[in-house]
Amino acid sequence: MTAAVIVAIRVPVSPDAAFAAFTRDIGRWWKSHPLFALSRQGDGVLRFDPEGPHGRLVTRFDDGKEWEIGAVRHWLPGERLAFGWRLPSFKPDQATEVDVRFEALGAETRVTVEHRGWDAIPQKHVARHGFELMLFQRRLSEHWRGVLKAMSERLERFALMGWMQAIPLPF
Image (tube, rainbow, N blue to C red; front, side, top):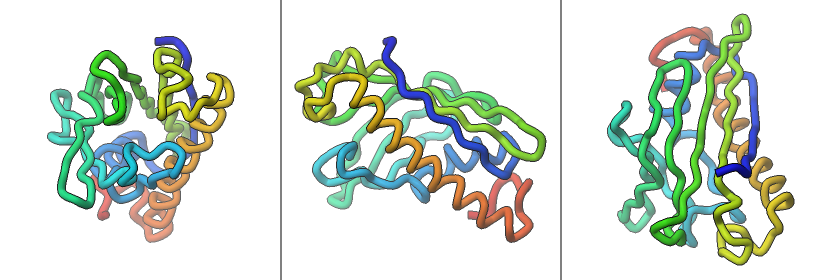
């Protein structure tokens, strides 16, 4: 897997709090995107189940059906999270990977998402919308910026309330 989208954002909390927000609370800030929805039903509600190094990222759709997006490959709280990313439309041998890093920068944390492996998904696949790889990666990076911004805005609301360094965050 070589082709990757890399997006970073700073959030006003510690790396441990950012990791907790990304993992424990992903279902509260993740927003579906019409171009990058997991299915025609949208994205459902995402969660890590169970949380931890042997977990998986799953989603529950409105009709009650669940889909395993991918297994957790690395779970290092406050440092790194990596997991597989498969859409229901992928063939069994198709998958991408998401690698998330958390780096302290003073009172903030830089959260960097690298979503790689899209060069293994054919341009004609429904997930790529016929986009050539560079255009697809540009559009996918816009999506990741949007979901990370939603996470950041949620964290900023709690930081303004004086809970900036609280672990776990009171969501």
